[in-house]
Image (cartoon, rainbow, N blue to C red):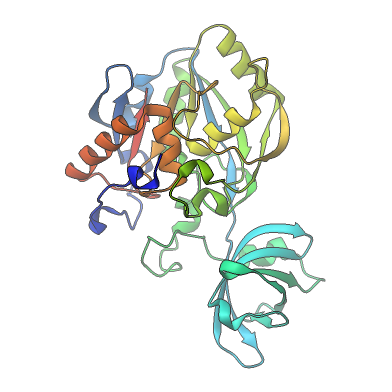
Length: 345
């Protein structure tokens, strides 16, 4: 299939720039694959679409403040780093801006924090390998001086909303390591999650640290030639057991987000069972892929021509997904990270 087949028109004013006052106040488009229909709802009614003994799987990754602002030393000049992946202690792969100022050997200082770093290697596409000076508790310093790594389509000063540190994070986030939020989970409030559990739904968690690969643009026309960069994930024993029992008994597995779906589909073995453990997944899902674990998917609305939209289209079919997206545009749903959501049954 061609990348152009996963395009749609989106007015800029529908891109959500701020979170709603209440997490669970977002709208939810219910898409039914069997009937090829959809209807409008509210996320607060999510528990009404779950049955006792369904399994709801959450991604408990925690976003860290991966955007750092600094200056070249000693000449000055503002630079910005997005920490992508820790290669080894104090050594990071980063996305830099403006990259031309940060060639091999360049040094960076970060405000009054006394933290300094040096460019070890200049890579293509604005990527750099950066070594931070030893002798610091780097995670603590990053937590102090870093900013939430909001996506570029949120066009406001990244530090302008103090609430981003809390709102660009799910209420159940616990495992530090993501550079982007698993956005389908942002809608959950304690009240909605409590109602889900009260209905006898089994809620379980896994971890997939969302990385740059999830959002890297698809740069090829033939989508089968695109490969999503590897991301680390972990599935605990209790989660694997709950999911395997549910599948053996014909009960439904609801994945909260494309990251959860990708982790689950990466962990299913030739015997059809989820294997507990951790590792790295480079699974790239296109239409034609046969989902083996996920029965229903909660997901936000994704960018045109993105690997995430392609994954959702694989789950529900490109024609149905794009028709539902056009409906969401016509009805002025809010799009992307702080936007509304879609429940695909």
